[in-house]
Amino acid sequence: MKPAPFAYTKARSLEHAVELLDRDGARVLAGGQSLIATLNMRLSHPSLLVDINAIPGLDGITRRNGTVEIGALVRHAQAERSSVVAELAPLIARALPHIGHPAIRNRGTIGGSIAFADPAAELPACLLALGGEVDIIGPAGPGTVMADDFFRDLFETALGPRDVLTAVRVPAATRDTRVGFAELARRHGDYAMVGLAAAARADGQKLADVRLAFFGVGATPLRARKAEAALASGDLDDAVAALARDLDPPDDVQATGQVKRHLAGVLLRRVARQLAEPPA
Image 1: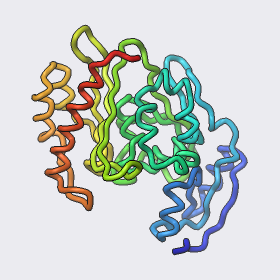
Image 2: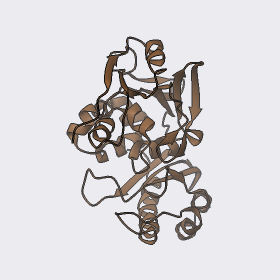
Image 3: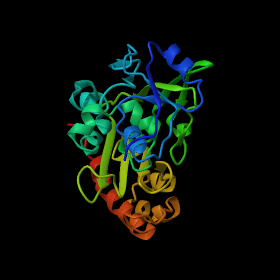
Image 4: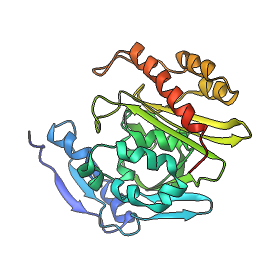
């Protein structure tokens, strides 16, 4: 199937992009790995695609003030090769190889994945687990939204129709940082039936500041707060049992909600072992 007709233009700057997005039906084009598919299936009908790939300054990975900042146009493959991401954002490094296939990671962007906010995608859950931030620019100027407030509903975020996501930031890992990641998919590269991104801080023999972000179990990535508290107390069985109160996954073509909740417990046990390991 071919997409419906649309206009196309390249933005010269962020301000130019915001100006172009004032047109009804305008959409941002970055890597296009999700957008082009929805265009071809006529699930999206934009009047104008605003290509932001020529805007300078959006493709860097830097350490800044105790955080790792990743520009919106950083490709998945670029982040996968980054020594900064490997050392200071190890949760993201663990998740990246699970995203699609090499051809997709060569074009897909970090910002595009966060902005599209597929509930079964890996990176939104990682951002939520790390307590990250999203930088946005729009008609009112630049702003920042915390990950806990960014994901609103199914494919709905804090981005307005004229906003452009410019970067994401996560706390830089320290010696006390513990992370874990696991997902279950029918085939490697498929969207996960259930996945879990987790982060915590080592506090002696226990874990503190536990954040468990499940994906594929709801309209957005979801924190399992009761399971977080149980895991921080050192009771893994209690944490797994708490998922029955934290998660209410709907049935879908992949599995029933009951199966998904069971798989979430399986993943929590796997990820708990990862959280117990000191960084390499």
